[in-house]
Length: 200
Length: 230
Image (cartoon, rainbow over all chains, first blue to last red; front, side, top):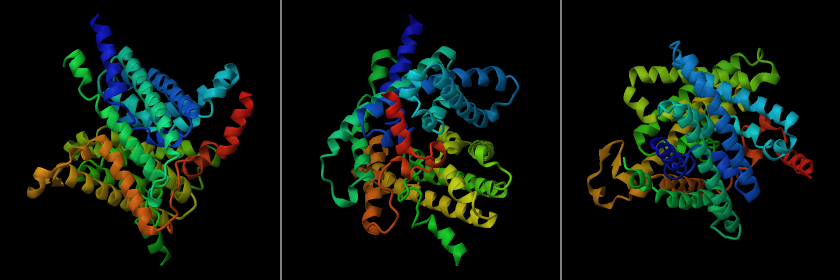
């Protein structure tokens, strides 16, 4: 029972309270770039969940069983980014060959995600937070879900924004950032939810 | 004269943060206080200069087809170096920057300059470009952090400003304030330059520094995906 409670707490924290996009500012580029249309936004979000899960599944064992026992923890950054980049390429080739339907829906977004700071961030955070393998996977799933949620909500906001007529200097990126600020404010309200639900 | 132009390019005309809108993640996350902003800016500048020099030196050795992985390894190497130095000599700052220090690896300013400048220019010019772009990044971070810290926390670089203590607007130091201040500052720069600067219009693929190696042509790429889906 305790385990389930802990895992639920990790998910709630990473989806609502520490949302990667809206409160940790990781993965801003795809968040602002691919959120113009709802279907693109959800495609990107699902691709990010997918990559976060496989990246964590690969990097956690590498850190725990290869780098740490040999005192090579300082290689973390180099190893992680290379593993993630190689893995994404590899997965793209495999998907293209064996699951063409999945590749059609996710393939476009995969190369974009290689140098996405949210993916590298989640793998490093899982190690620094001292999670075990199951907790790391759950935390990655939560972060990915949080990213998807933020993308989908923001895509809805932006579709409305198309009709707005802001001052000239604010057109384009500035007004998009101001809208992101309001969405972020909504998530800011979740601040105390986890401690009040689960205790410290 | 040309050298000076390379150096000042990054400061104003092609400021990586406010004009090209690159490196948004560290800009938003590390502008809560001026101290953080300076530390982040200097760390990124150091990596940027070193990686620009190294990539410029290696530009004739690296085969074109595998250049991006090579750039990433070079950048990751220098980031690790900076991380280890900071952990040893500035442990407090190391704690404060946290995961964002490692994330300099995926900062698109650095990869973008490697791809757009360092692999086409000499070592000296690349070093100057790195310095100019790094200084532009640092100054932009400090400008944003000043607004957020002074109005949001009533202090500057940790020193309290007496008369502002009763008029703080704490939301500016919180995440929503980051987005808002960033948007307003970009609008301000756009208003001052009146469209003379090569302002980045949107976050579409054409203006992304990764576009050249992600998929050469994003529109064509989307189109193929659509036709394949049908």
